[in-house]
Image 1 (tube, rainbow, N blue to C red):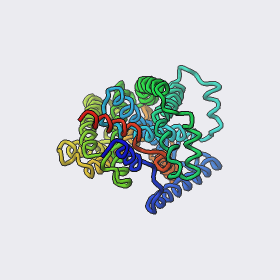
Image 2 (cartoon, helix red, strand yellow):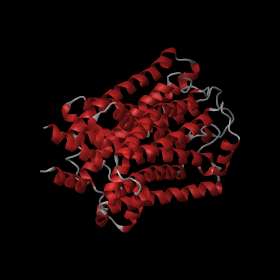
Image 3 (cartoon, one colour):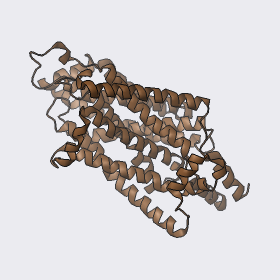
Length: 437
């Protein structure tokens, strides 16, 4: 096959595709969940946080658990895009845009869920007007905002060469798509000067996003660690959060790889080699995260201070034990055993493993928040019985599920509008391979 026909084949394979019947059903389900979540939030705005099950002790609950989960999974943008680009890991090309859009959708809803948790969204203005730099909450807002903008640029700038290709394929696009492509990329001509500037911008963004990504997870961990409570009073939290974020981010990419590969027939571009490589990375990340989990629980369990004892007992053998061991086994232990073997690093086992990692990670974030709040240093006295337990109300579940569905909708619509695998980079790499033969 000559170069021009090869380029055309790659372009045809990677062009955005219209939603099939199953795709329309998928969008309909996600949209319905989002509408139910919006209605639940309307009820929360109208009747206040009283519609939730949060009380004086559990004042964060499932919303902040979801926030920490979104922040964690967003780290995949810096792992796959920035670190792999800077390390010149060539095989990661088909995965970079998948990682970037997951990062953008996750950090967007991390920002939104914080506003939901506030109860009075109009008071967000006070954080900017009267914020105090010595507050970890102010640090969190600053790094989340910075990370969101860097992630958006890191998604947009490498997309420019593909926008030029899309503008050249106007007859294959709908009118509304052509308007989007012209608006976003009509200035891109692809000359050497633009390419040089683009490469420099991408390198700068990749260098910038790594410390910002580490900051966002460290600062989020400090929101907990600087609060004097059993379970949070730990100097391990920064590294603990970062290692867990790398793992869940990798798990999210593995799931997305399999879905896009299967649904859009991208077997030529997302190959078994990619699952093999991601499997090896995920094993390493699982082992690192497992180490920090052992460190997080073994040391206080060995000392067994009275304030920590009740909290640990609830996790290991008490009310939260089933969820705790589920998160440990399903989120780390079982994936390690699956991915250690070559057969476990095939596409389908990796897909199942990725789901296990993501689901286990969500429950792990819930366990970081709720049990600790139910075990303050000062014993609960003279309070109603429902203050001593927490299970989210239907409004909380609906808003949480709506936020997760919303993040998936962003990814779904992005894939409908833009190529999920970089066309220009894929063509360039293929041509370089052909010339080197």
